[in-house]
Image 1 (cartoon, rainbow, N blue to C red):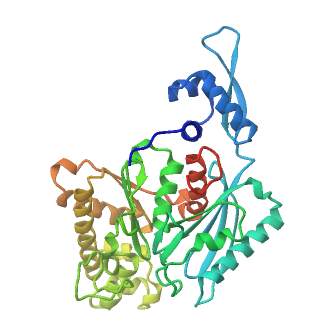
Image 2 (spheres, rainbow, N blue to C red):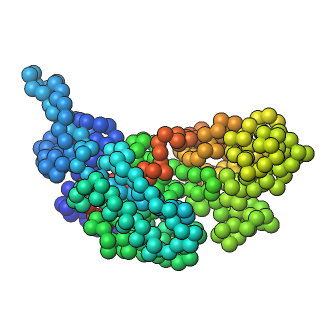
Image 3 (cartoon, rainbow, N blue to C red):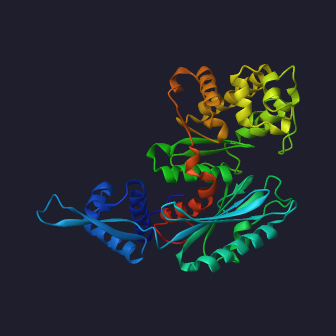
Amino acid sequence: MLCGTNMADVKISNRSAVLRLLHESGGMSCKQIAARLKLTPASITVIINDLIQEAILGEGTTVPNTGTAGRREILVDISRSKYIALGFALRKEEVRLTVTNLCGDLVYEDAALLPETTTPQYFVDTAFRLYSMMMASRQYCTDAIVGAGVTICGVVDCANGIILDSDGIWEERDVPIEKMLRRLFPFPVFVANNVRSYANAYSFLLCDQALKNMLFIRNEANMGAALILDDQFYDGDRNRSAAIAHVTVEPDSRPCHCGKRGCLDTVASMQGMMNSLRECFSPEHTPFLFEFCAGDFSKVTFSLFMKAVSAGDPGACTVMENTLRQFATVLAFSIQLLDVQRIVFYGEMFENRLYFSRLRQLLSEKCPDNIRGNVYDVVPSDMKLERKAAPTLAVSVFFNAGGYKTKTA
């Protein structure tokens, strides 16, 4: 359905453009901002003055104005001190609260363990308890909180704040977690799948315009993916887009938590690889690995696994090669189907040079000539995505809404 654009939407869009520009480029003068955004200096001055009055922006150093002798322009930048964002990362074993300022700096962190069997209400109560403890210890004002991001593995309806499937954290389905939290919190709440939130944080914190089209792959204990097309997350009609982890690669293999057998997750995830390694672990098949850990498989780490591969351990080499070939086959098909040039990898496995170089070699073999120029990035561990992703979810929505606290942005 066609619709026009009213002045309120134009104002939000322009404010958002200013915030995004300053986030990506750092401090700038009003004149520089007007030139970059192709808006009149008068319009930008009004926007900047409003954002300064709201303490979202602050004035900084002065620089010479090359257009007028003797006059100096004042730089404005995003304020680090006035506003904060909360993040609640929900895992099977714990709820972790992290807090960042608008620039993505961590300013507070706490966590609470969860019982083996939990419920959505228990999570909500735990999140509110962590929030209350933070407010008491730091004496933040609720007006300073732009919102809270909630991240969880599983299937999430982000638009409506509903956790459709928590991937085994609790039995309940279609949980309206946003509505439950909003009964307690006086600020907006945003819910997202954890991998999608990692992709959002990576794109937002890196300030890289080349990430407008991106396939983001996370492979640690389990595997997940997120897809950005034209600078927007693509969720699909049922919030299950980019579900490469559940492509069947070995139909008669291990059961997957999704209910099928032989999903890529059961084969090529960290846990899947370790399960395959356990099955062949012996002095005959994995002699080097067996010696490295004194015959105790509980001591096997991914680092030891790669050390055994490097040493030529036959069983370890076979496991890595088989799992990487399955992974590369599914990934190469996804790259060709989606035609995404930027593929971002997140997890300890990809930071291992031996593992990642072999994956890239296999992708080069499986991808046609016209897409072998894809950019493959590995997220460095010092970005701390797992800690920053949830609050960054709230900050990015705040910026998109032009610095207004709203759920509908």
